[in-house]
Structure formats: structure tokens, C-alpha cells
Length: 453
Image 1 (cartoon, one colour):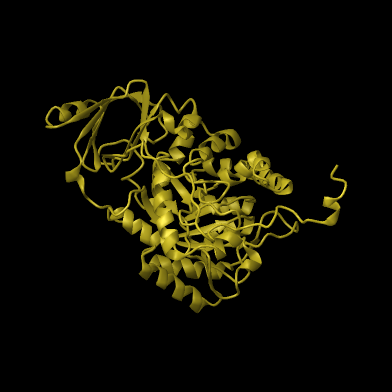
Image 2 (tube, one colour; image 1 turned 120 degrees about the vertical axis):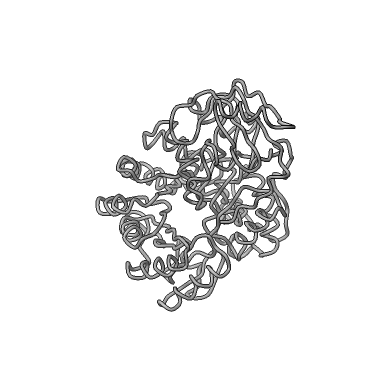
């Protein structure tokens, strides 16, 4: 992705007396950090020495705080605007209005300490247009990489029969033949996507097997990967059953979302390929833990609780075998609203996978640079890296919940420029036809009207 250089507009900042978590997973240590232009100019003694030579330097005392890379959320849906159902998402959105709304939601994500995110797939071409608007300075937001419409076969994704057998709907484009697949990859690359996304699995199996069913053959997946890679674009797959994860890894995908229910064969394929995994368990955990507060189906709560429990061991084994784990929140749905839950995946990695807080924070910072295509430039507090920096009161390495408390944020920088953390943004809005309307929450059978006394 492109990084716009507008460093001349930003003064230099020396942030001093903070504990520094550098993103690598190493223990925090106190040292000064110098931001100059878009970059981290120096850390440690070199930062103090260079700062003495800078006119107009701004010094910030960060005593009692932790300085760390801005969070990277590697699985968002910025164009969805928190629908309660696929019906709402597919039939109650308009392209222009979705882009305007997404521009405000991106600011909510930024003020949650997320300075970069991966928009896995979008409705219309909202992701592409929003990314370009942010990079061009038209609107404020995190740095962003985006997919286009997710490639789905007529078997359907998790939306099932709401999707047609051909054409487009919502976030999906339906492809059937090899010619369809090649044509759509080329179209999206021409439009400017950073990633091609494939819905490798979908259509829940009504209890016949764990997870979803695989909707693509290995040869089809290889065709998509080869076509995209020949054009210089990586491929990411949605996989929620063993065979889909196995074949996504074998086909050469560059990142896998979910990868739940892995078996031994799938795990070996992932380890062999060393393909990064973005488990994105926050959605399931939110529904399992808090679904009763928002009217979620109790049966679905148990299904998601089981998905986390049954997948955690394999994620940990993959991690121990060197497979990168990356944090993603799936923000964009009613269960994962923008700005609220971007930190929670780290807590899940600690609680269910047994990672240490330092390891989990690495998964949400330096490891996430892969999803932006900025490895070696993003997600680390080191000289020459992009100056995306969060300063939070207290020590999140001992209490990850601090990263979900915006009142604890003392400073936030994106590309060396301070973000106004006090700016008020609307909690919600009322747009005609934007949300699904309900006549009622249940059927008004006559029996419900009887014996009211």
C-alpha cells in the first residue's frame, strides 16, 4: 500500500520516562523515543542526543505510562456499519452513503488506539475509496489495507440462500468457472485492492459436521492464488473447517482468517506453509459471553463457545511451531461495534491459547504489519519505523483491559502526527431504510393476548 509523505507538517516529539513495549514481545523498559516526521527517528540514548539538535521540539513527560506501537486490527469490515443480520447488510445499504458512514466509523477505530487495520472485504468498492481518501488526507482514519468483494461460489458463504447463484450481492461476488475466477481477480486488481479474499468455506452444515463446508476445490484455490500472485497481490481465505484451512495453506494463500476446527492434516499444512493465522475469536467470544444481553440465540452461544474451546489447542500448537498468529476483531457487526472490542482478541489469546500478555501484544502490533504489507516498517518502536504510537496510562502488559479503556489513552500518534483524542463522534445515527425494521420481536398469536390479568 502507498504511504503518503507529509512529514513537513509535523513537529518532532520526544516522549520521555515511559515504559516502552517495542512490539517484538520483549519485556518493556524505560527509554526515550523521538518522533520526527512520519518516522520514529531514534530510541534510547540516541533519541535524547538527536533531540538536542531539533528546533521547536515538543517534549512529553509520559511518567507512569506505557509507550507502544499503535494497535493493528487485521480483520475489520469498515463498510458494514454494524448490521444485526445479513439481510440488513445486503439489502439496506447504498454505496455513497456507506462510504460517508464508513469515514466516521474509521475515526472511531482510530480513537480506539488502532492506527492500522485490514478491511478484509467490503460492500461495493467502499474499502478502496475510503483507503484512498484516508491516504490522500481527505478524511481522518487509520492506515488501511483492503480487499474488495469476497469471491464466493454459488454454494454460498455464511449467508447461504440470501446470495444469488451469480452476480453480486452485499460484500460477495459469485464466481463459478475458472474464467470467472481469473476475470474477477483481474478486475479487482485493476480497481486497486490490496488483497484478494476467498470464502473458502461457508454454508453451515446443520449439525452434519463441525464448522462449515468447503466450497472450493484445491485446484480452484490454486488458480486464484496463482492469478493474484502473478499480479503482485496476496490472497486471504475465510476458513472454518479442517479441509478448507488445509487446502488454503496448500494452495499458497498468504493469510488465513479463522482457521477454526483444524485437524492434524490441516495443522501440518499450515505449519509447512508457515501461513499467518488470524483466528478472529472476538466475535464468537462476545456472542458466547454477552449474547444474552442482546437477544442472541442460546444455541448459537453454545456453538461459538465450543468453537473457541475446540480450536484453541490447535492454534497454540501452530504458534509453538512458528506460525504467526495475528489479532483481528471482526469489527463491523452488531456484536463487534467499531471502537469497542479491538483489544479483546489479545485477552482471548491469553485466556484460551495460553499466550503471555507480551506475546499477545506482539500479535496485535508487529505481527499485524503483514496484513498491511508493511513488515519491517510498521508495528515496532525502533528507528526507521512508521511513527504510529500509543501512550497509555499504566502497564497493559499486566492488564490488557487498559487497551480497551480510552480514558487511559494519553497520546496517540499516526505517522508522527497527534490524534485529537477528545474529538466527539456520534454514537449512532438514524438513516431512513438503513436498519432492518421489525414489526415485532415475536409472533402475535392469539394465545399471547389471553389471560393477560
